[in-house]
Amino acid sequence: MAKKFNPLKNKMEKVIDTEKREQLLRDGYCILPNLLDKAFLDKLRAFTHDFLDTHEVPDKAKYQGSNFHVYREPKEQENKSPDMHYADMADELLDYAPQKKAAESIGLENITDAGAFIILSKEAKGPKLYWHQDNMQWNHPKSALPWPTKVFLSYYLVDTTRENGCLRVIPGSHLKRLPIHDHLPAAHGPELRSTDTNHPAFQDHPDEIDLPCKAGDLVIADDRLLHAAWENKSDIRRPLILQWWHVFPFPSVPSWWDGTLPDELKTDPNASYEGTRIPGEFLKA
Image (cartoon, rainbow, N blue to C red):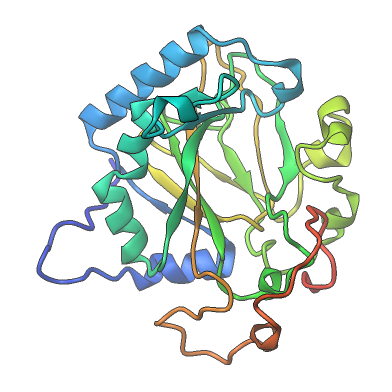
């Protein structure tokens, strides 16, 4: 059994996990084992299964498995939109103290949540998820920085293996252009949603590795990292909860950074750049 990651073990001293931080910078991801306590894991699992049992997944999300955004409850009821999902569970997860301590322990600074979590569960016999990266601002100089400015935090609510659709990643692909980048359409766009699994976005890659996880493990990954998931060959749903967090707002520099400052930091922080999911000049070969 994996050792429980416990950033709260010493409340008088700030815990710094430089090994996990260096892995996030180098490979684009790290895993913090067994972060969710059992009671909260069971609560999240029950909420997710109940939600999926009562909401139909649209066909356009078939490769993702599902794509439901669950937002914090607004302070005023009149601010609710009938087209959005709200739940107190969003507040509980986004404000979960061990999660925030874990982020701090690897040096993530100025973190702000997006106000929601996403249910990306894959049903029994669900297909593969295509290779993609989630950065939508490749024209912005921050896309070339050696540290992330946006990360996802994911919890698998059951143990995952290749059999039931575990995560696949290409380490280092957040900072280095690979030939596969030139064959990938915009992530989650109509071209990928309408294609079949013969597309290059579904094929094996020589540098990929599997990231099997235990229920309650926390996966933290750079939004520029190429990742995918295997199909769920099992007869049981494989539930996943994902959150987006902003970190190191441009042009801030991590307090712990001791390397050369990137030239991209010299650009006007107030300049605007057209959004795009397709990597450009800031992803270098």
